[in-house]
Image (tube, rainbow, N blue to C red; front, side, top):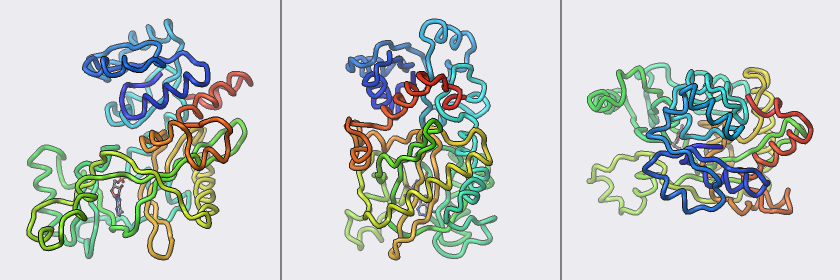
Length: 338
Ligand code: AMP
């Protein structure tokens, strides 16, 4: 079971391929679109996704379908963490770690424990000196991020966000040194059943307007007022130089270890480390996602990495269902749900 958005098609297709019945909780306005896909066995319409925190709604779903909820970015951006943690339907993965993804202070703590090189965080606007990126809390897909080089620019931009009621005050913003390099999103799956980490795909995001600005000659860039915003509109596949893979696995292993220590039971299932490679091939991680990311939608029929591990097309969605199947066979479902 999942919510109709983000990566639900891939998740449910994968579940079907592994022999499960599939259930989609879907906003009424999108039901017609999802009905096009025959691998979705049941669609439960809702006015909005907040309805799923209703206890009776959950009880009905459990009695009718006995589902496992696969969390994704829309669940996190729609519901607050307390609401997600209160859900009684079993959630695939570790629901407690989702709070660590959405709270920037906790997020940084887990990244530090994982020994991931990350951009310098500025404690206050007074420290801004050189190119910085300013972020909002939560999984907003880069929406509303902006660049500044000094305190005055920060105050001007922050004021606009306060006026548009996007934020309450400047304190809701989070300032990082800009990490220059090419973006790379590493899609992992950790199985607590086999105690193995898999790299299943790599992508980069296609972000507007930052990826649009390069299409305009520089003299027009300078005279235009296009903000370098980071709103994700899609994803592009990437294959890394093979010599970079040992470090990629090391980073993933360190993340799995750190999450077991800081947020038991750790990081069962999909996660993603997100960052940039600079011109010395050094990786700087600016984020992680502690659940399936939408970039995995590229690999419905497998990826150059999953093809090396599996003889059948293994999307991240399908890998989740394979893990559920194995856990059931071994009576270890508690290892992979919270
Ligand atoms: P996030 O929501 O943190 O994944 O970031 C959205 C986008 O902002 C990323 O895909 C990057 O393009 C960009 N970004 C985030 N943090 C940084 C950083 N510290 N330096 C450079 N670019 C960043």
